[in-house]
Every structure is written in C-alpha cells, then in structure tokens.
Length: 85
Image (cartoon, rainbow, N blue to C red):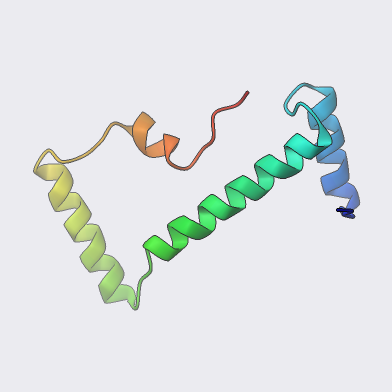
C-alpha cells in the first residue's frame, strides 16, 4: 500500500519515529488507524438523538456514579488510549 500524507502529518510521523514515539513509519500509521477504528466503535456504542437524550444519559451516568458503580479513571482512559510502547 502506498499513502501520501500532508506535509504536517509527514513531519509528525517523521519526528515521532526520530524521537522514539513510534518504532517505524508503518507502526505510526498502524497506531493511528487503530485509534481511529476504536473511536468509530465507541461512537457507534454511544449515540444521542437529541439534547434531552444526552441529558438523560448524563443523569443516568451520574446516578450510576452516585450508586458506587463507577470505575477508576485509569480504567476508563485505558479503553480509549492505547499504551505507548
């Protein structure tokens, strides 16, 4: 596969590889696509029809937290962020 990045993204990836953020250009692109796929899955699992629907879901979430059904922030963030290598 051959891809063309914007100059800004190309610089980001190149600098990321140079600085050790990514093992390679391929690894950088793969990680970006994995994050995009994860974001798409999460968006599908949470959709709102209206402002009232959003407020209702927020109220339900707050009630769940008040009932002690929350999870630690580290667990919540782990669902959205892939650990760095």
